[in-house]
Amino acid sequence: MNDNKRFEEEIKRLKNQKNAVILAHNYQLPEVQDIADFTGDSLALSQEAAKTQADMIVFCGVHFMAETASIISPDKKVLIPDQKAGCSLADTINAEQLKAWKEENPGSVVVSYVNTTAEVKALSDYCCTSANAVQIVNSIPEDKEILFLPDMFLGAYAAKVTGRKIDIWPGECHVHAGIRKQDLVEMQDSHPEAEMIIHPECGCTTNLMYQAENGTSCKNGNGNGHENGHVKFLSTGGMIKHVKESRSKEFIIATETGMLHPLRKENPDKVFHPARENAVCKYMKMITLPKVLRSLEEEIFEVKVPLNTAVKAKKSIDRMLEVTS
Ligand code: 13P
Ligand code: SF4
Image 1: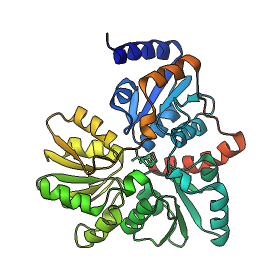
Image 2: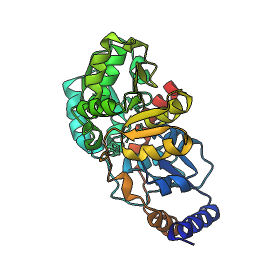
Image 3: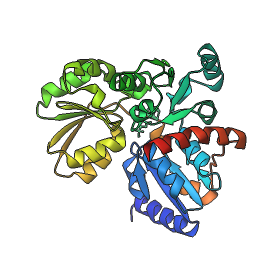
């Protein structure tokens, strides 16, 4: 029996014994995704955390995602197998900076991408994910000013699709910002038949959205993606759904390369090319099978949000789930 098989069996045994559920983000290592009870994008994982009957959630993802699960399910024990699994995007704004920004813009509605700390969520009116940013912005009355944070590319994408004027925090994810328009141009030259699928956190997004001006109307976007001929802007969960339904046989995937695993697994007859081979999130890759096993054995590392912060942060998540359910 190889090492991975041994870890898998032990993880399964402990999981059943402790009534635990393993949730894994689409960017996790393939072997971690394969032992999970549920894999998905940020939105799907928070919805799963909200409805699970398990006593314990082992969250294979990054810290803000485990925090979100803990905020939604405060009675469950939420564990992250490596405490250092952070997010460079979430680190671009803290509670003090958001307080100051709100004071400069009284009366504005604050929409925070889920990639934020619990303290930042607690100061926000709405939480959103890449799957529903457009829907959330569209649900806000037209006369309200909107502060969107922290991802500037997702913010620009939401502004473009909705036609709303939005104040956007200048944050970015180092992995997605590194995927530039030039990468896509080169990939499309090499694979002219391929459909291009782009995560709205990518640095190339704004550029391409402007090019979409003359394509399908941006205003028709439903929050699950926007199509312009061979180009589609989608959350990681949206990518899985779209590829399954698409008649195309070849795809260029512009996001973190972990995404290739679920796409290839579910679509063995289709071909996938990463837009950039080195688009790898080192934080997502910190979670390994031995760490998942240790997490279950020793019930570490527990992620718990102070009650006062959790109650306020939950309101912004609940508002998001109300709009999207
Ligand atoms: P999704 O919500 O599309 O899964 O994206 C989360 C994320 O961290 C992207 O880097
Ligand atoms: Fe954060 Fe970027 Fe990693 Fe996503 S890919 S978890 S946004 S650092």
